[in-house]
Amino acid sequence: MSGAITVVITGAASGIGRAAARLFAEEGAHLVLAGRDAGTLDAVATECRDRGAAVVTVPTDVAVEQEVERLADAAVQRFGGIDVWVGNASLYSFGTFEQTPSEAFDRIIDVNLRGQVYGARAALRVFRDQGHGVLVSVASVYSRITSPFVSPYVTSKFGLLGFLEVLRLELRDTPGIDVCAVLPATVDTPIHQHAANYAGQPVRPLPPVVDPVRVARAVVEVAHRPRRLVQVGRVQSLFVLVRALAPAVYEPMVVRVYSMIAVRRGSVPASSGNLFDADRERTGVTGGWRVLGRFRRTR
Image (cartoon, rainbow, N blue to C red):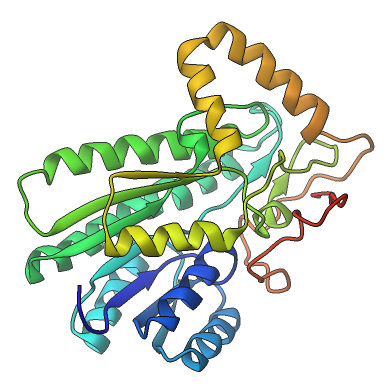
């Protein structure tokens, strides 16, 4: 792609999405930023304009297909097309399957999986009309491994990777359209502070945590040089190999590791986090987890 490209980013208000928006802005891209809170999107847009980008913000709940279609239409109306669609919006929760309310489980599936499906459908409509485009979906190492206490997230990410693989097969003979998956390990974003917690105990992400800018760079790189799958974070990616080769070893090991490291002593009240309402306070790129010796509680 040459010249200014048009990039749609969902989940642009914080974390990987916000970091990716900044990086694309530094290249002079035309940006269409989506998230649930208009005020936060405006702040991200200002950062990107200061870096040289033309920006449109479209408040969007990706779990609503009509809103995702409206997002694609806004990009076409403002910039004439879409070169790259970055599906990044995700929700997270802690708690066993039995502790997690059905409405919370369903909401995570709606955003993390159906939101990506809606985004792909909207993007492909535009890509086919113009004859090119790159779909970049931010999945997770949890698309290939499992752990306790995160059943809706793992379900959504396994489903997402399967969907992308099928989509890639169906588009195999369609020149100019690429489907890419970025699979980060644990990332230092506010998603863990945003997370719902039904476990009744403080929980922290499994270390080591990856710098979100590193993941954002991977997103930008595959947008320019498409690859079917990119994993970011080597240590936890080793778990993929262990699970594949020795599942009888992997399962008791991951239960023990998660129980010893992620679940902390004490008690916290149940919270739905940002599942149903946007968090307007913790909207930075990082969540503070990479600070040496510092592990915040997730409530």
